[in-house]
Amino acid sequence: MIRLSSKGSFSNTDKFLQRLKSRSYFNQVSKYGAAGIAALQKATPVESGQTANSWYYQITDRPGYFAVHWFNSHSEEPGTIPIAAIIQYGHGTKNGGYIQGRDYINPAMRPIFDQMLDAMWKEVTK
Image (cartoon, rainbow, N blue to C red; front, side, top):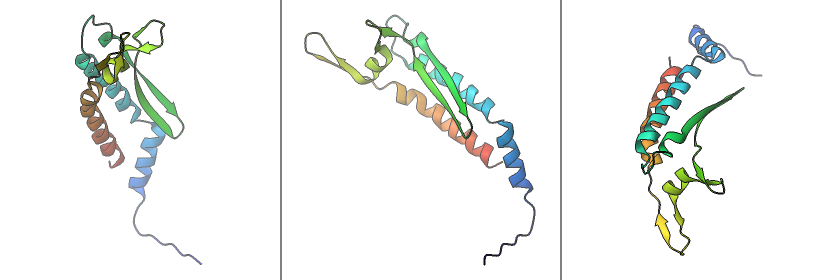
């Protein structure tokens, strides 16, 4: 037999669960989505500016799960080659050469991820 007893109040737990139910944290997520776009636009190498101006984000919100995803819509012929990924990871050339990638996404997004982590942790531990 298992016996459980407790003393005190569950008011902090109740408040936390009510905040989760109201999804008040969701407002912070969209704020960081926009901040990520600004950071990516600033960090993207600029030749024409088209890749830098093609960043957008989407928020996925399902029961028990939410996420922010950043995308770039700039692509070249035949429409399946994402330019942001080519800049990030590098690519082969028609002549058999290789152009080295430039890691610009990770350094740009690291401060945004750290801010999100701090904000979410504060929300959970209120």
